[in-house]
Length: 348
Image (cartoon, rainbow, N blue to C red; front, side):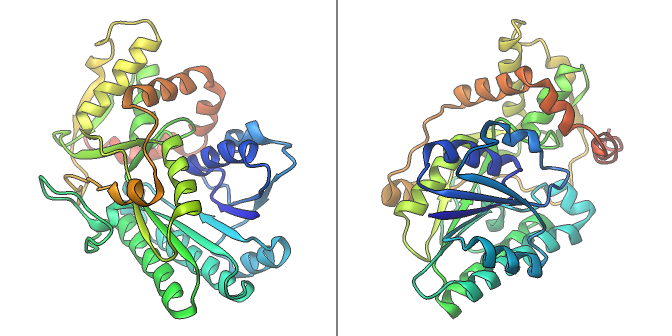
């Protein structure tokens, strides 16, 4: 099968490809990525030269490019991971999120409609549990929860979700949708919480905590998320949505302390070695208090369960950033420092 992966030089995409290319040699993988600031070509070094993998640089928001790509590559499965994903950036500049998340998805869907015959092709759309808005205490969002996005990022992902369902209903496109909770793991851009904590701690910089740090998230290790994608691709029902999560809730402050503890352990330092770096800063606008996903449908219909405990995932994550300083340095190059200062510098 010919598999087109969008956003494959990003965090989840690179982990998906690094796991899939060597294990699934019966498939040919085409990775399309525009190489934005969050992409890192070094993330794909493990599969460089693999006979069933190739990279194509391009922007999925450009329909002419996508149309030509489909004409040339003839994909039978699209795993759509390309997206702008950082909520803070969406607050500063929402137009980029509309272009990537909405227009980009529309281009792909239109190419599928044009190039796929009835009964040929599957479009797997990867989205976020943030489209449902905050979950009330004692509840979890399910696949039937109403949409209530509270920030520009979530709103653009919600729009893309509705486009996918509309193409399925109107044109008979075979689709699957997965809504994921917060991911962490190797190769994640250091603007995100877990690698930001690690990167700052390694150089003795303050670790910023928004508000009181009691915002609750469900954390899934990225390899588990990638396994869940294949479970849905292979066992999920056409047109269905599946919530992907570890059902492992932690307040952000508690997660930060777990990350710092894992880092200290790997470095042979006392558990509280980095505690003094914790710095509470002004909260961001529309910061949802709690996300929690009911992943029972995924387990019931696709037989999926997470393999990694939180501590196992954190150990692997910390080890990656300690062992590959060149990757982290590349990710922090360019405009990264200016963005961090713009976003966090005025919150103290």
